[in-house]
Length: 141
Ligand code: FAD
Image (tube, rainbow, N blue to C red; front, side, top):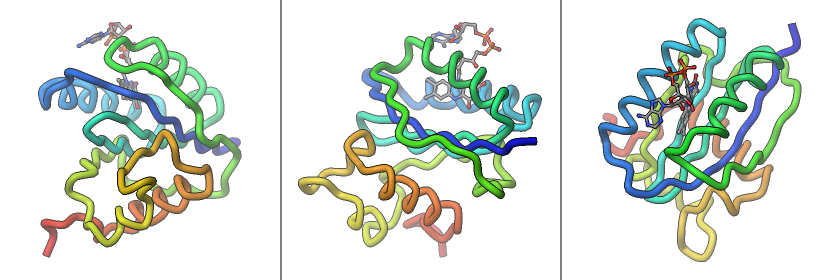
């Protein structure tokens, strides 16, 4: 099986925690079925999502996500074959950007703001790798 990793960003507005919970619940159910793993990073204005799985499964998932009216301006940041999964244990790991330690997030600010949609492919991949290694939560011991 070709293992594909895809990262996209999008914009959201007027969503509340209940919306995020619904998205997460549906994503985890579908992704388990489709053998997709990954992470969804949420900022005040943007989503950044990493999906990894077979090329077909990731492609079909992206098609559904792109048509979802709960966000807009979907932009693919990177996509390609990889050797292994970064988020092997997560059908969808929810990461609130506000909880990521300041010393980690500060490395990726653009003009003092965390805007995943404006980050380079390299910076996005580097951030995803860092987040997949754990110990990013500002409230973790
Ligand atoms: P159903 O759940 O039956 O949905 C049917 C239709 O209704 C779809 O078009 C769906 O988009 C729409 N819909 C359902 N609930 C709502 C709602 N509360 N408000 C508005 N429209 C709604 N899906 C995944 O499978 N995997 C993912 O990793 C994933 N990540 C996502 C990340 C983001 C940022 C967003 C916004 C959505 C994500 N989704 C993900 C959800 C995806 O967009 C589809 O809604 C979902 O895959 C459709 O599942 P379904 O085929 O079982 O259809």
